[in-house]
Image (tube, rainbow over the protein chains, first blue to last red):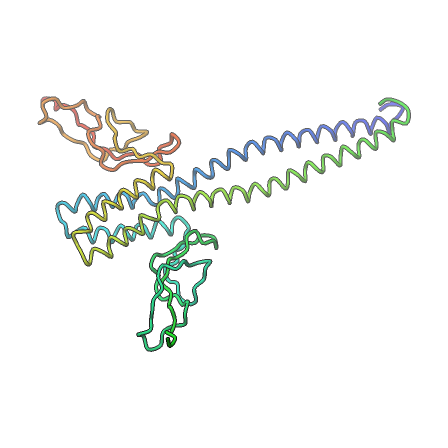
Length: 160
Length: 160
C-alpha cells in the first residue's frame, strides 16, 4: 500500500478493468472468427445430411434400370419402390409435402395449374376452389418452398 | 497518475472503462444471440437448396409412373430421364460421385463389395486392385461421405 491508498486502489482497479475489457475484446474476436467457420461447417453438414437422405433414390433408380433389361415387368415395381424412397428422403430432409390441398385457392400455398369447368357437375364447387393437386408443393418450418400446382374450379357457369 | 487530484480523474476513467467494457459485453451477447439465428438460417437455406435440387426427381418419378399405365414401354425412357435428373441434383448439391474408381483398393474411398477371382484372365491384376464399382460413393469438399462399394481382384491364383 502507498501513502495515497485511494489513488493506488483506483489505478489498480482501472488497470484491471482495462485488462478485462481487452480480454473480452479478444474473446469476441475469436468468437467472430470461429462463428464464420461454424456457419460453413453447419451448412456443409446439412448438405451432407440431405444428400445422404436422397442418395438411395439414385442407387435404386440405377438398380431398377439394371434389372429392367432382364425383366421389363420388374421396372414398375422397382420405380414404385424408388418413389417411396424419395418420399422418405423428403421426410428425413425435414420438409413436408403439400399434396392434399383442398378448399379455397390460397396464393401463398398454391399456383394455378389449370382451371376446371365443372358446369356438368350437379353442384359445382364455388369458383376458385382447389379441386385437384397437379404437382405437390413443399413447405419447411412454416415457409412454402414451392407452391402446389393445383386445378381450381371455374365455378357454376353463369347464364350467357 | 501518481499523487494529486488523480483520485477524481482515475474514478472517472475507471467508470468510463467499465462502461466501455459493459458495452462490449452487450455487443458480444447480441452477436452471440444473432449467431445462433444465423446458423439456423444458413442451415435451413442449405436444406432448402438441396431439397429443391432433388425435388424434380420425385416429380418426374411420379410422372413416369403415371404414364406407365397408359404406355408401359415409356417407363424405361422416363426412368432414364429421372436418373439424369438425380445426377444433376447431385451436381447441384455440390457433391461429386465416386463412380470411376480404379487402381489399388483405398480404404479411405472404397469398401469391398466383392472379391473377384480373375484366375481365368490371362493377366489378372494384382490382388486388391479395384476391378469394378458396384455402387458409387460420394465425396464433398475433399471428404468421402460414402465410400464406393467396389469389387477387388483376388490376384493371380497361387499354385495349391
